[in-house]
Length: 567
Ligand SMILES: [Fe+2]
Image (cartoon, rainbow, N blue to C red; front, top):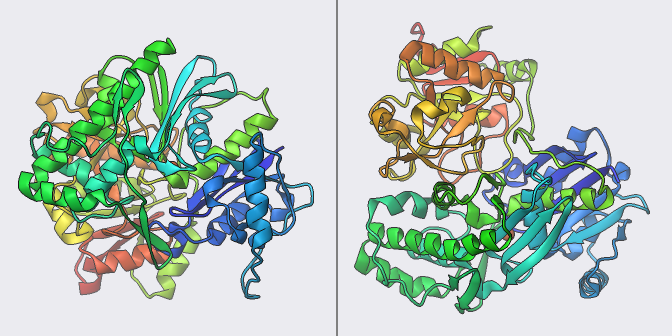
């Protein structure tokens, strides 16, 4: 089995293509429809994956799906194909029941993706898909590894622990939604007026501004002790409100939590929420590390987008190898399902650690130039665009940086990024006011040259994907204040030359100009929108915000051109 397409239909819909065990393409539907957290059938993402792999649906050996996304729509878009026998008979029956019950006829202008008769359709349990996304990208198969999945709920589970050994994952423990620390976090997020399943970042950013109020939230969350769930929490039925292809979620607890937040103050409330989940997750995970006698930990599921908890685990000293799959939320399920199928059918193959997330569309200089010409936008070509950009940043300009393949997952990693100098504290406020339009308490990321990371961070480890924060060394906090959070931490991206030579060169040039080998990096989008994908979208964002310059490929576009001033 060589060519495997992973398809996620549900909130954060996505598709991924794995060929011979290598991730060829991975993209969330939202990037192609511009609807944040798009939950539609990911026909655009599928089309992109097939194009990126240079294949058609007839070439596929398997289509893999997280079972939560199973619907009649699946069979409509993928006529033909065989549903793989699963170990769980009930799962197979469930699938057949659903598919036989409904028949959908699509309008003729929709594209379908016909499959060969021998192409397998393989359902994979939601949590096994998350576990697979973490383990089969970790490179840790030579050693006994604990794999932990925590999310809101998926296929009835909220918490699961696995043993990774060789190419196999074995379930150790699982709990249903009464164990969901992620739902507690989401209900608290909703209580502050933000979206469940989307805005949890805001809670995490706000928490360090307050003081934990011990006991104030007792009774609203599940409790763990010695690796076991000792107190379930009944969340009640979750409510879902569909909104233009996306979903809003509501938990009843949010009503009571809102009142508590008003009494405590938002900052103190956020601090207590963060304290609770860190403490409870520790009570769950640390004993299992001891039981499994391992210092290797792999994690996935939306809970592990919590960079502060990931930092706490690292500084606990209990792990030597900590790997959090960078696309930990549900858009990362497709990679998990496809890798699970690949290693199930190819058990002799070695597991490699992934090195980049540059798995989306790219645009050549020629395509970029044509887009600019079509729109009659003045531009200049620079062969040394990295130096030109570094000079702009050293002049304290806000620069959008658009290069190569778009990133998979929630983070911009120097291909679709907005950059600024980290040297001035006020730059955070400037970017928020002029470009991002987001809350002032949310931190910005430093992109640091890999070799220079130890100059800035205390006791860090390799972190290429901004999924763990670390303490910033005391002596450098004042030198790069725009990327140090109020609690003295930063969530870095360490940049290696072999993964992104252009971005590496830009940061290096900036370092030569200013003495700091760090730039402020935030995703190329405005608040509430998905990250930019195409040159056309980049141009729209550039002219609709206070960006000073847009760099796409080797082309520089500045607003001064429009007033005939020299650059
Ligand atoms: Fe999930």
